[in-house]
Image (tube, rainbow, N blue to C red; front, side, top):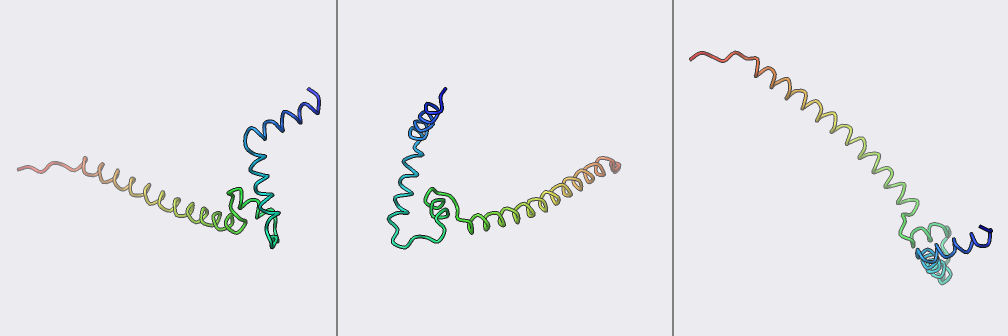
Length: 99
């Protein structure tokens, strides 16, 4: 397959999947901005539905905090299951009282 035919096939793929339309709309919106944003890439990311760098950092910190909380809760759960199992074993081994 020649280089030109590969390029054409890729262009058709981008067009069929809607990528060209989405990029065109975002670039037109950027062009029509009266005050150009200081970071054009963030403008493009935000308009394509992605988070800004600040949002990404906030979400990453939130994820890390939730991971710590999950690990704490998992440890508590494991400890509670162990205590329950020990209690069940102790209850099974207790002699039944005589009447």
